[in-house]
Image 1 (spheres, rainbow, N blue to C red):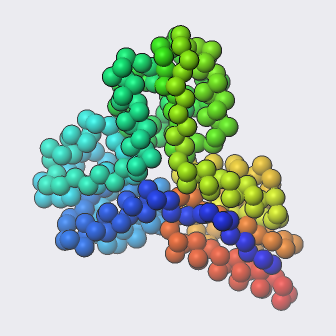
Image 2 (cartoon, rainbow, N blue to C red):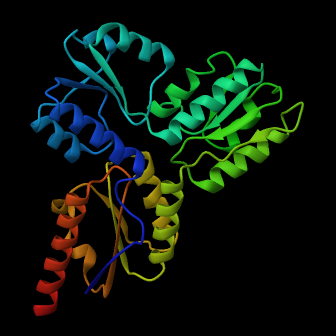
Length: 285
């Protein structure tokens, strides 16, 4: 049985940068607290906790002698101000792709324009973006929700960075019908998300089984699962090698593997090793 890795997988630039910033703070002797889990990967979060990193839920939990870290998803301007007022130091690990969306929304709001963000309104990234244009922004999950919006003034249309491209394009087209002027449409899906989805799609048609390694609550990992299932019905989202069911691989000559943008390399290697071990056992039987 062959185990084939997609051409693009695992840590994206923003996540890798956030982890490096936390480890740099630890190396400097800081007491580190992250506002919410640094990334959407339980195993990597647990590894950082073993090094002394703790997760807090609100700025009110920050003590004066700690270094507070803004996670890759970003926060609202008010939350950042609250952190800066309480912590001895604030490390802003917001992904640069997310920062771009924040700045676009802020600029449009300053110009008196409406902002439509396509994504999950409950996702921390979206909550942060809306904070930059609180009076002018609307979040829609897809095109079907655009009809419920009020008439829009010269809108800016942007996307959650981990969204599927078709979902964004369809929603952006729907916004045109509810605008008093041609909307400004900016595709803010990050390149890492696009690259991982394209690579997974390219491989999915050539394997019998596909494993996506990522958090069960990770937006980009869930999108990867959806992409893979378009061409490979036997696609599974797992967090650890222990979740692999050998029966799911039965009769497969080729198994594909990809990983979400928050999945560390050490975990990917464990999954690949487990798959090869199962494959070797089945071939020997």
